[in-house]
Length: 90
Image (cartoon, rainbow, N blue to C red; front, top):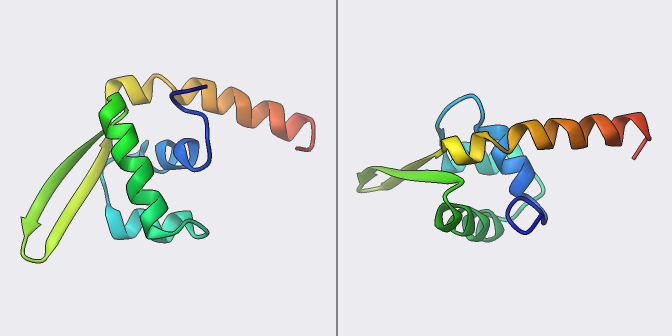
């Protein structure tokens, strides 16, 4: 839970499962999270090896984030957690 627990990490991984996503698109998909919070979580997740950051251009700065094989291995746990929450109305 230290690695994928906490607010937003699971949601970020979930949104990255279908392929690379640009930062601004991810921020829009997450809705209630501030850009600062998303950036902090992404940095933490990059340090842990869950996501990979790719710089597309420097002027203006454009980056994408992609889930790594290690991050992808957590998706089954997230799916089970989602099923458990739905089954119990949480």
